[in-house]
Amino acid sequence: MSGVYRRPFSSDANPEAVGGWKIPLLSAVWLMQHRFHIGGASSLSLRGHAHYLSFGGTFDLYLYGSDIPSWLPKLRTDADLKTRNNALFGDGTAGVENADFDLSTEDDLELKQSPWRWPMPMSSTERAILEMLDEVPKSESFHKVDVVFESLANLRPKLLTTLLAQCRSVKTKRLFFVYADKHNHAWRRHIDMSAVDLGKGDRALTPGGRLHPTYRITIPADLMPKETPDGT
Image 1: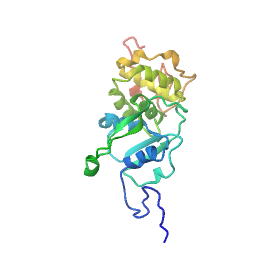
Image 2: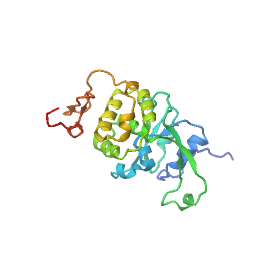
Image 3: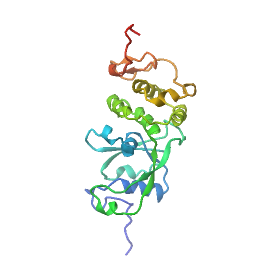
Image 4: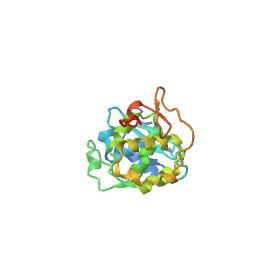
């Protein structure tokens, strides 16, 4: 009698089963040789900014790449998988790093005791914040980005300059500098502005927003630069 093939991690046997998302992702990358990475707010959270991103609800897992297997988002896991293509950076892989990836969770004692530690392709903090900005305002809020940006005191200006030069979204780049100027971390003054194309013309991003005087994009009033006593 021939056996019945089931796709790996399929929930055919128990359609109500909900599994963890880590092992399927690592298996897709390292065993099945698919090429994609974790990015955006998901990478920021996994890199230690969860405190700033935790507003309750399901964990949104952003995956970036042109080779994400179609079966992966269909799995019933403890994360809400959101797939994105390579449009933001094209085929550029700057800032995608194999990050140490602990399989364990507080609820999974077997994995907690496992000696295996697999790396997972993941956006650096520098790339991840640009990916997160690209989701504003449809999938990420101005406020959440503002809170995260406050914690980004140790970004690498050389890598940021490279990523900003490769970034294809004028909106994303302009928003980045709105937040960078507002928080004024030490790395801001080391970014090579001559390498970054901010485009031309005004950009309307949010209804009822105010037009930023430098970056010419509409944003919430609380993100506008503070006026000096002489009104400038």
